Image (cartoon, rainbow, N blue to C red; front, side, top):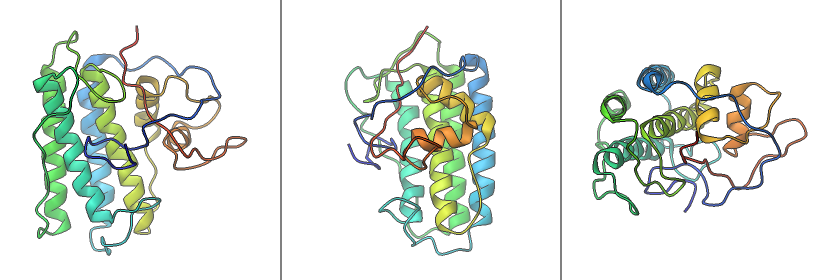
Length: 221
């Protein structure tokens, strides 16, 4: 699995050893749709501010253009929705979503909002005992919401960095996904900096930038 694969994930398939202790307890399941909505608003606002820039540029740290990363984001959010609906036990779903390649960036951002809203509604309506396959751990609805937030925030960071906008993932959203998906994240740093380190996007004091990483979607007590 590569850094941008067709399963809608954002990393490599093997995690490097984590040097630290566990994160705080994740947010209650009922709050995840609201967190996803908050992430959607924050990320789309930042991306809209950069809509007039050259989206053919490579996204920060990636081989794909900013526009292609946006299409990947639509695929990922829709894919997570589909996994929660279909609930396969060992495979990805057969529905693939994409943005109109001829549409202007603001219209593409509308597509991202649609995909994120579908995921939030599905998370809200999915019973807590439901589990669905993901290559990085069978997850519940909260896990897929956290994956969606991770996709939104990290790829917004990738795009805005490439387009010259100073944007980082909000700390409250970063803390929530760290607790749910990165249980061995290092302590003593801001949540945003920690998420960027966990996802191989930045170094931390005493911790070099990771070259391999993945999250853990497994449901934990």
